[in-house]
Length: 96
Image (tube, rainbow, N blue to C red; front, side):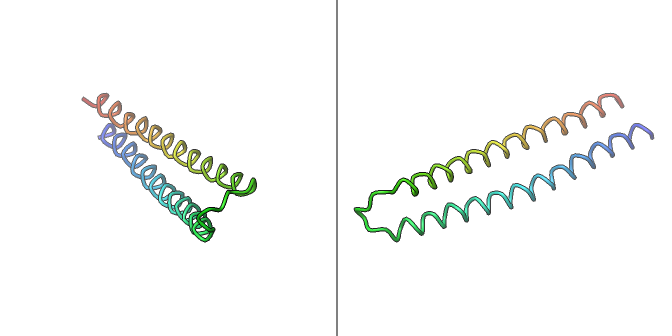
């Protein structure tokens, strides 16, 4: 019975972590998508033959870095979730 409670506790950790990651990922992706969409709208207002200014290039580079950082963070969260799920398997193996 004690072993089953240990498994249940590990499963609860996974579910909690999954929920937290899902909420964070959704907010982060929405914010990043909105940021990129706003930049696109601003650039769409420029004439077709417009050359980007140094400031605009800097803003675009910052946007690309933000997207890259977001994807890396989401990937790290995903890998971390795998290790938490693995702990459930190890706990189950100890019961068997």
